[in-house]
Image (cartoon, rainbow, N blue to C red; front, side, top):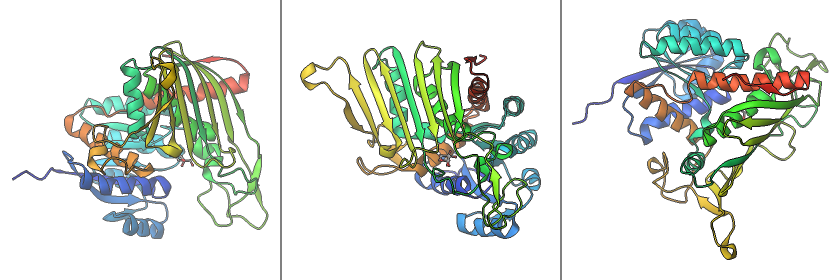
Length: 394
Ligand code: SOE
């Protein structure tokens, strides 16, 4: 008779898009994977009591709360899952770590390098006491991305020369799309750069296992003001709109930048919310001297692989369907060919976090990994402001 794994009680702060995605993961991970600890969805926190209670009922949390500080202090919470805008990541994560609670924090880690440094220091202190922290770069946990990393690691494409990464969305291409917290610097820290650019910075470093050492970038804000949302939607300090009121966009709409990698590769990055027609297109191509890899999240169960050693008559990109049981995570789900979706990466994130906590190891990506991404983000902003190349400190 197996002992039932002891519970890991979770308290989640924030319950909108990321809160729903994380809730799905906490619900499903123990139902599809043999976990060494059993997540218990203890409490969800939101500023509005009614909305938090409704979220608890809808998403499967046992209780709801309106003060994250009370959630962090609860003895029946072992792990704090932070699904809020970036301006609250540091204070919640540091309070939780200092209270010896494990932490999962959404990306980007923070809104500034200083905040990210303080978070990484708190995580290092807490790790000494066996408390673990992870930052939520979930796309690493798409099986095709794991395959790409392994093929590079095994030398299948040789020396990496080019890294080409795009993250393309279009949800605010309409200039009349209302202002939201992702368009306000005091809430989000930056715009497309931090929200979606952070993902392709993490992903390309994860796949190549190289680090970005220098960047030269340009941030652009196409639409400088927008209509205020007609109902108060948590806009920072923005009063509920009267008819026709407009507010300033204080972040970038698009970020483009060049990069140099430790292994000598050159990178071209594009993160934009104005790629009309592209809803959530993450496109990565890595060119080596023996081959190439290409990934497109709109076809997320596939990795395209080119082997330069192939005879000319049959040379070409091979379309690998990454749905077989030998790939990470896949065996827990469906037979080959049935495919996984956006939400599965969040479930895989829970599996890896819970496993690391039980094993007493630091889950990746760590807060230190998140800090390094934050330094790249800041370097791109400085580069754009000063029209100069910027180095990223090791
Ligand atoms: C932006 O709209 C966003 O929600 C990001 O914040 C998420 O990290 C990404 O997974 C989907 O798009």
